[in-house]
Length: 165
Image 1 (tube, helix red, strand yellow):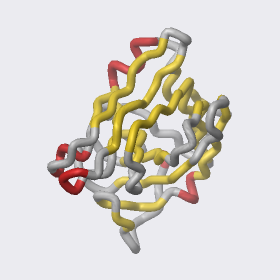
Image 2 (cartoon, rainbow, N blue to C red):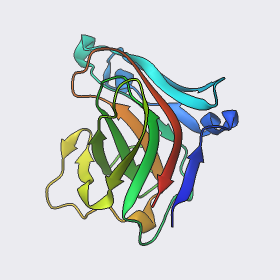
Image 3 (cartoon, rainbow, N blue to C red):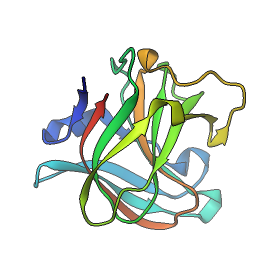
């Protein structure tokens, strides 16, 4: 049974999300999650490689997004031809271990992307962490969207919903 974690058809849903860009390391990338009048949200901005930058992200405030027994996360998104990451954290800390998975939705059309829990990889500040425990969806507390991997330039990802399945 799928449970909708975020319904971006409600404009105020974006209020719980904040940008966390490479400025935390001296970079110059910028991003935001904004409501769109068409009834969805848009994760947009610019990735700059200047000053050792290279990523932009938004993260929801910690909350109850745990789902024991979940096997997938589902996103209804409108791609722009770039690759994105969904990131989950199992604590309320700002920094620390996260579990990430990349996805590249088709450009110019709405699609549902299904991301298997078993495919998430443990990372710390963008680097894989070998030997870390796998993602435990029953402990999930934070969720975020990211663009990285030196994809310089503007980006725009439409998003209608995030579900746990």
